[in-house]
Image 1 (cartoon, rainbow over the protein chains, first blue to last red):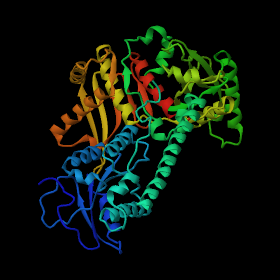
Image 2: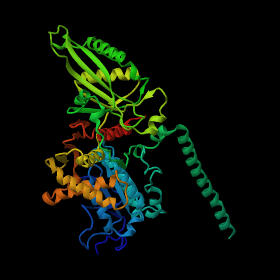
Image 3: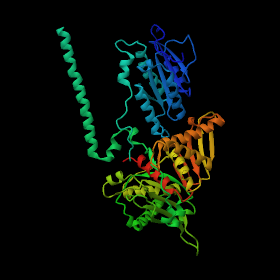
Image 4: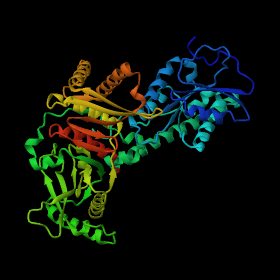
Length: 182
Length: 363
């Protein structure tokens, strides 16, 4: 029962639930504040530090799981990787995505960005780069998440999460493994 | 039935058109890349793929640089803390014309200082004497251009009998074991000396840089030693322990907690060496060539150090950032300062720094 399953419960009417998993528990709070302001759909935001989640019968069906990785900390990446094991494989058909912050900082080694890219490509998940320090950045990230969330919750006609993930999934540039010099 | 068949046939051309377009893009890209040569790979591909250090590194042979280099130059290079920056290739730089360059640079400095700077009491009386010299013997590969040392001495206008000239600024341009592929791809008149280390007053540094930019059409920029390079330095310096004892391995981590913590983690040399050799033994079982250090060994070495710290203090250093590494062989800071404390194993450090400079340099 430690796996989080995507279709174990019935969906609610005009509702969508999103789970934000972040080791540092900072960006998820500001994202949640913006996400709940959405008026067309009733959005339920659940926050977690890592998976597995404790047993809770009242938890609604989670439509989208977002792993937030802060690139300046290696611990954040390792904790997200470790949490992936506790997610049912059904989530990787478009109901899981990665959100990455602080990608532009000079202190971030490129190997870490590459590793996150390779992980997202391996799991066929979209990779979103977000900026968490300004309010415009948070609003922009929340809007992108809402777009994917509405599709995952089945609220957009003629589109399913799997269909959208085919268009938005992360791809690797062809020479990602080549060093610049021998 | 007929209608469905028609719709099916009308769909397939769309797919084939898409397929063709994709392959056209790829071939266009490849031909564009190949006609521009090596330099294009770094220019066209996005920044993520172009900036990557080598994953394999050769542990250098016990290269006793003290035998090849003039000892007074070596004494100048060692035991001072240098600020690093990268330099793009220099146009028409001749190692034979260093004396005329020195004269031009001193004239330039004097002219700039007279150009309406506020009068500084005392220093206006001094004039500057610039000397450029070649430091022979530092380069390892055959393609490397020779290292150039720039020194600025200040002498007062009315010197007393044996007043020595004071060294106010010094810097050196070097290229140790630069990638031969890149060096050969440069056009004929360019000399590539990508690593620039300097120490001294800030206004003199900016004057020297602007003179170089004006005469040789190059660009300077700050060079940080990023997290991966600092990890490489930890491994390489520990690896040199057999030739020159490192006495201790000291690392400075900053952990972003509230309040922010700064952790100084010192490991005894013998323990560091034992840990490193056990990591090497574990990986050598896989059939690695002797002498090559792999990135995986470096990460497992660092992981072992961090987990030891976690076992004792319950603080995971992965959440923080490594900012400084120092051993008896030298110290390196994230902001781009390097200090080489001993003349042994200098070329390993400079090799890594040259590679960092070459990678950071915009072509």
